[in-house]
Length: 374
Ligand code: FES
Ligand SMILES: [Fe+2]
Image (tube, rainbow, N blue to C red; front, side):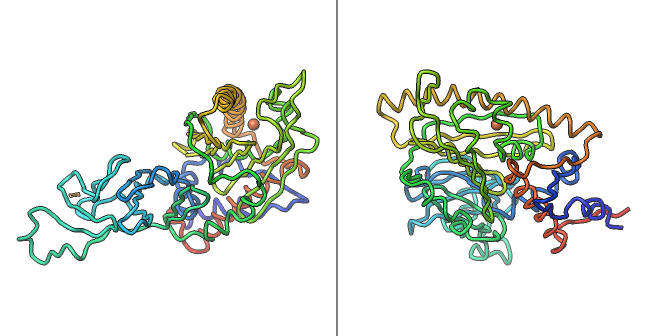
C-alpha cells in the first residue's frame, strides 16, 4: 500500500481564494514529508547560489550546496559559467572544497583532475588499469542561469527559464537597477521552525501592525498591496515620508518585497537590495541568510544607511523569529486544523501554499515520490 501518498493526497487539493485554507500542520511537522521536499521542491527549482562578482575571472570557483547536494560553479576558459555536481567520478570526493581560483578542478582525495568544462584530464597511476580511459569521464552538469548579476542553479530541469520566472521585476522597480548593486555584508540567523513557517510569515503584511511596531511606522499599511504572478508574489507599499515623528532613513520611494518560489526573497528599497534565502536544516530548524547590496558603498551617506539598516533589520528579524518559533509550537501541538486565510491580506500565502501543494501533486503524478510499503 502506498502509505505516504495516501497520507499526503488529501492535503494537496488546490485552495481557492473564496474558501482559502492554510496548509495542514503535518506538512510542517512530519519527518517523511520534510525529507521529500529536497526532491520535490528544491531540486526542481532555481536556487540562488551567488553573485557574478564572485565569478568574474576565468578559473573562479564557487562551492555551495543545494538541498544537501554539493555543487561547484566555475567560469571556464570561454568565459562561460558552468555548474557541476561537486562529486568526483572516482570515489565521490569533492573536486573543489572552497571558493577560489584555479585552472582546473582537482579532487584532493586521489588527485583526479578535471578541466573547467568538467572533463577528466588526468587520473594518477590509473594507466595500468584495464579498460580505463580518462576521456570517458565527465562531471555531471546542472542547469545554470544569470539574472541581474545573480547566479542561479537548478539540479533538475526547472519548470521555466529563469528570465521568464522573474519577468516583470526589472521594469517594475525602475529606476532601481539591481545589476548595479554591490555586495556589502551578510547576516545569518538560525530559527527553530520549519522553513515554510518563515516563508508564510514573509508572505503577508497582515502581521505588520501587530508584530512590527517600528516597521509599521515606515510603511503605509492601509495601502499595502499584494499581487501574485506565476512563480512569485509581490508586496509593496509607499515609504512614509521622513518627519518629526518618523525617522525614515531609507528615504523616499517604495518598499518592494518579492517572494520567489520556493525560498528566495528580494527586499528592495531606494538604493538597497536585501536578498533573503531560507534554507531548511531539519524539519524544525531553518537557516535564514540575508545578503545586503547597495548602489555604492563608499560615501558617508551610504555608510550611515548601512549602519541604520543593520540595526533596524535586526529588530524586525528578531520579531519575526519570535513569532515563527511560537507558530511552530502551535503546529506541533496536535490541536491545529488548517485555518481560514484572509483574502484581503493573505493572497501571497495562498498562492505560495498552492505552489507547495502543486509541487507534491506533480511529484506524485510523475512517480517522483518514492512510496513506502506496509
Ligand atoms: S575520489 Fe576523487 S580522486 Fe579519488
Ligand atoms: Fe514580519
